[in-house]
Image (cartoon, rainbow, N blue to C red; front, side, top):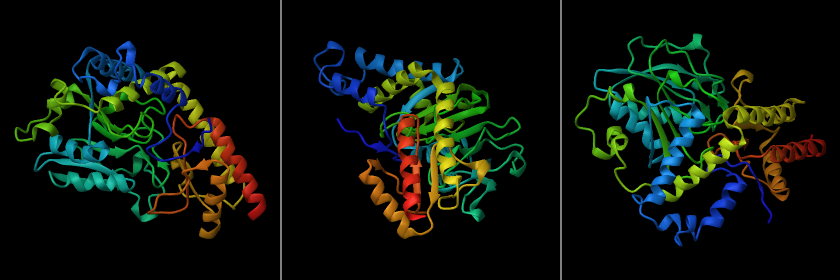
Length: 359
């Protein structure tokens, strides 16, 4: 079977062995004679899938009993609204770090509920960088500090968590979740759409520290949008097949060696790709050097015509989904956990050949 080298930004490539396992179990899960998609979400077989996914995630991240893990629908986009609805009251202030389109969407929703302090913005540089700690203008008594750890459109990434001086950190980690170790003690809440590193589209994982959850004081939050509804029990029918696939991806990640393994591999992939970009001025990276993403590598060619030719010829080499986001153009190679090193090598070989013929 022929498989393309898939550089999609999301929904993104999934591990081949996960897809093969799902294929083998599709019609007859665990000897039941039924697909996991056909089973009750409250029955023992699916309950174990949900429990296994939760336990794997806790093990991978080193989460203790002081954290809740829930799988919710609506993607990260709903979380922009939901977290502010739960944790930001009228008259309160939250700090938001603006590093791109997804940060801007989160800021827009937060302003519906309380005061938003823009602690930093790189909009004046077309979001080509993330801040250093010295760049941040934080509010000492803020309810939380929100940041987007990796910016898929502009190809930037925080090298580590921003320093918040003890204020709870909230992170939209959608596009670099589980790609490297994190300092979990800094976080009040982490949310991530599954469709980059965690599984297929259709679910978002939300990790909430229990003492942060206890800070919710509102009584008028709609039931489905109240985090306490979902941490108390399985409230309604979840996307069972998506969570089943998430569980398989988490087991695959554990078996490969966990976050330290993927941090090493992802660094190797990114260094190979960036070194090819930087070898002369034919390719030009769009993010500042210290802010470059190891998940979404963005670059330009000398002209838009050459970029279109690059994309067209790349497809003939089974190199797909390399077109930059429609808002910025250019080229984008998304190299999440399931993107193999061999795929990045195939891309860099093509890039070198393309440059030799067109440079």
